[in-house]
Amino acid sequence: MEQEPQTDGGLQLSGEEIVTLIRNIEGGDQSALAALYDKTSRLLYGLAFRILGERAPAEEALLDIYTQIWKQAASYDPKITPLEWLTSIARTRSIAMLHWSKQIRKRYELSPGSLDSMMTVAPEEQKAARSHIGALIPVQREIMDWIYYSGLSCSEIAMLIGKPIGAIRTHTRLGMSKLDDLFRPLFEPKIEA
Image 1 (cartoon, rainbow, N blue to C red):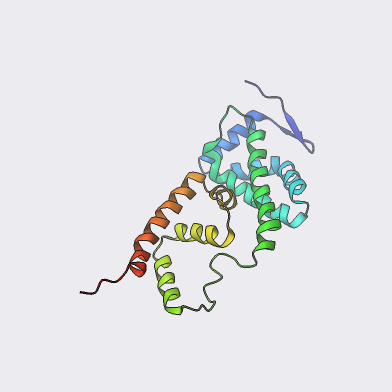
Image 2 (image 1 turned 135 degrees about the vertical axis):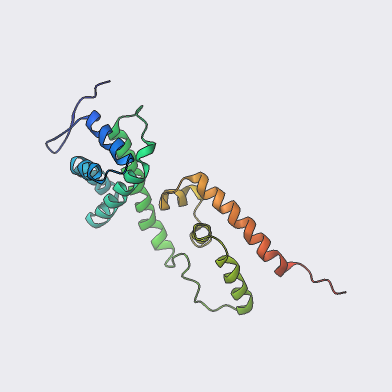
């Protein structure tokens, strides 16, 4: 199935050529990623800039876009055109960055984990809570921080940190289960013999 060449500022982009680059990226070929960047970065930067409206965030998004392309090359489905796949990644990552910059940073001046040094009215309980939360594996701890401090849904967190929604839900469930096991003794009535 021959795809018509598409242009990006004068560069000829053959769908078959891009698919070959994506397959080479899947195999870990860094030069293929560099070639794909050379052929598509103007197009993807333009999309990121259109969504984000500023140069610096669009440049930051472009780095994130190609990082995702590197990580997700194996997920490319030839049923869609390679440019559709690339622009879908660019759009998703740019919207995630937009969501982060316009809503999260304005609503929450705190980042996950930044409350660790704050004083509380129950320092012993806080110390125990920190110890229990520290027992979670890092990815579970990060996701629990996002859920608690940002109020985002699992799908929003997945989009922001670039992990599949199923993984976010699984880590949330496992983390909550482990925290329940760790915190339960603190709240169960003490039975005196």
